[in-house]
Image (cartoon, rainbow, N blue to C red; front, side, top):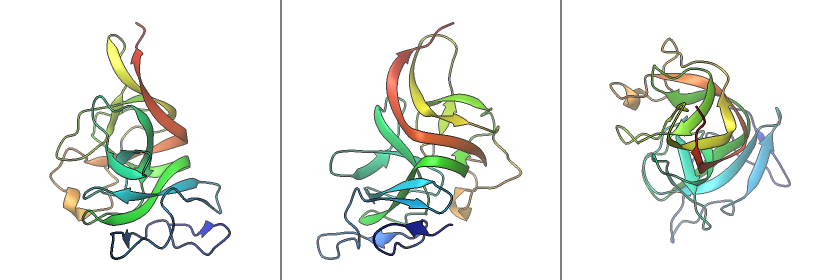
Length: 180
């Protein structure tokens, strides 16, 4: 992972910190930073176990939660494995990410949020008719590669059997009526 830049010396993007009432995170929740490639990240508090490449949404208190089939709001990609709740870390919201988790059926193109499976929050391709919760400003640049395994060995045997490259530009989800 690239080093972040900013007014203070930031840790690498993959570093996750303890965040609780007795051990606050070293950065204010909601802090934003860029790496040398121009990718942008936001520092969030996690509600549970998360894996690098998983999608999350967050609330006004910067608490990151899983995306489900009816999620609306801002989303981003977790960049470091989170072992438990009461942890805080970086979520990518802008730039190119080459390790977004996906099932093997995902192809390049437009995305929407899907139902969480195996406790994972991964995008799916947009349908051609009916209602959907479209992800705006994030698209799959590549199809899912099952030759590239997800970063965490804990994901073996789950629905997230590959990764894809995504372009992010401050993505958000809203309910759309897809056109046919």
